Image (cartoon, rainbow, N blue to C red):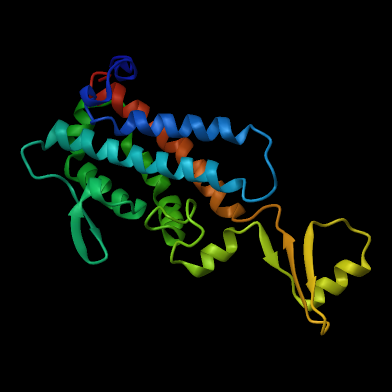
Amino acid sequence: MNAPYFTFMPLHRHFDGGFGAIGDAFKEAGDQLGKIPASDMHKHLPATYLYRHAIEMYLKSMIVIIHKKFDASSKRPQVLFRRKWRAFDTVHTLAGLWDCLKSLMDKHANALKSTSLASWDELDACADWLRRIDSDDPSGTLLKYAGSGNEIADRDKESFKPMSDVLIEKTRASDKFVKALILEDSAGSVEAFMLDYSPIHDLQVTISKCVDFLSTAHFSLRCELTNGL
């Protein structure tokens, strides 16, 4: 087992074609962005997107590593997405990429055990996280566009949420400070929006756990299976 020499080499010379190093770069950017004070409006989206993309890169890296190490003579690994088989590097579905990786690991389980000290069965711990993320963001667009095609998730991620008439009255009657915009027309009709300080909290937590887990797994795989390259 060698140190991760790949970190000092150009991307095109990496055993995995550079997927893992790009994942590391996006994760580091997400870590740093999360430390910077920002406005309350939608600040959760960029860092969470960087983490989500890092997860995708780690999965693709591990797919390449296992495929090239044990099955390089076969065609490129395929992912089932929207009822069609597609080359793994052309899709963004995390659940689909996980299924592809898991299939390769099961296929080459004996070879993995004989060439590695790690217990790769522990990777199964991230399966539920990946499916949870994919349920809201199967194409990797939720966190980088205002509209991703998933209307429920799009409304949930927004920093400002519509206020009901009841909530407006409760807010006016309370002594609590809130950030809100209340619009009232000449006829007395009211429309209001209040800041949600923690939108998509559960999704953020899931993505954060998953990227940390896969970062460590990817590092271990590089050291054990690719001679650090």
